[in-house]
Amino acid sequence: MVKKTVIKNNFSRNAESYDKYSSVQRNSARKLISILPVGEFKKILDIGCGTGLYTGFLRERFRSSNIKALDISREMIEIAKDKLRESSIEFVVGDAEKAKFSENYDLITSNASFQWFDDLGKVLRLYKKLLNEKGIMLFSIFGPRTFYELNESLRTLFGKDIATSSSGFIEKPEIKNILERHFANVSVDEEIYEEKHNSVKELLQKIKYSGIRGYGTGRKGFWTSQIIGKLDCIYKERFPSRTATYQVFFCRGEK
Image 1 (spheres, one colour):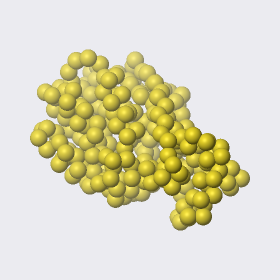
Image 2 (image 1 turned 135 degrees about the vertical axis):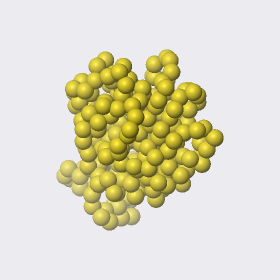
Image 3 (image 1 turned 180 degrees about the horizontal axis):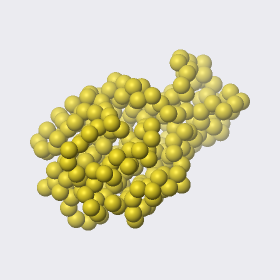
Image 4 (image 1 turned 180 degrees about the vertical axis):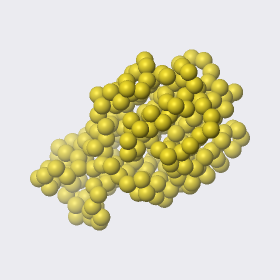
């Protein structure tokens, strides 16, 4: 698991560029909104709101709801505040795994942030306590096949098990088991998004500026121009379409 300080710093450092490079997160947010049940939620908590991309969709859909949005990056929050300044949303800077709330919610939701938590079970247990009776927990989370082409190319280049942090994301069966321990009417659905890139360098840039941090190997100074060049040749040979895969799980549970 990538250290929380690294995640926070990466998102903060690239906050201004996030919306330009976050097409997959935008598609995931649209999917989340589309699968929310018909009706209204009086109080909504948005976890890992980032620049407010998904938060804005929530406001459009639930115009009369009270919405609180939390993110670990102050820079991300400031952009979200500016973007949604007329929308009466309460923004909070804080660590979603440690934050304390004094009220309960009818919907707790998150788009593409839960893969960064140290202990998903602990987080879900925490937020279940904050749900009102029959409240809904709904979130999207990246799966371990995200950037599998890049990971396979890395293993080919080095002849051993070197992979990015995305390869350690939680598998679908484990997510479902965790949800079933805490919620009723559980579902975990999967979507695969694909994007094409001209080069590995372009892909790494996309990853960097969208804050995904999925390219991290835990090795300082790893991504030299020489390694990127060799990797680019392998990637093009193994995956001629130069596709990058994003595996996203859409998870739902009811209290």
